[in-house]
Amino acid sequence: ELKNSFVDPVDGVPLRDRKRGKYAQCFSGPDAVNWMAKRGIHKREAVVVLTEWLNEGLFSQIVGENSSSRLFVESSKALYQFTGTKQNDNGSVHNFVSERFTKPIPCDYCGDLIKGGVVYKQAFQCTSCQFVVHKKCLQEAHNSSCGKKEMRQNAGFSLENSEVALNALNSLYF
Image (cartoon, rainbow, N blue to C red; front, side):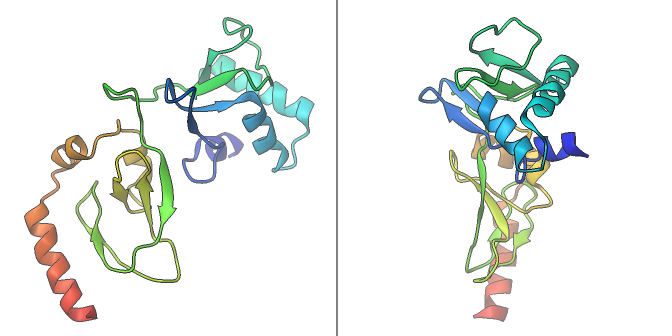
């Protein structure tokens, strides 16, 4: 349960590009320990658990002191990345943040419409490529490399079908 929460793209350890984009979607030692502390896990216990996950291959140390070591390092100079993080030719992966849209828009992953609203954030948008997805599509889209055009082609996205649906939905709302 804790491990699933840790890797969750929405509620998990915060990921971001580091060193001016050289290291995509990674976290530092303190990021991980602080995330665990917010869940009531003491620092020493967090380091033990994080070392276990490192040795299991959940993530790997990509830069920092003792990067060949199998011990988790709590230094801000130690950067970690989840195993299997996919990157495109530019070395970037999706960085989704929750967003609110006032009008319905198509999901860039599945093509279905995301209902608009003014109260709740009902979609997620990549800060790198502006790719927009439903919450239900978030995990699959997050595991894919950043690239709106490529994703739309792979997902069978049809701009024509989505525009027809969008026009029909807009006529109901507006």
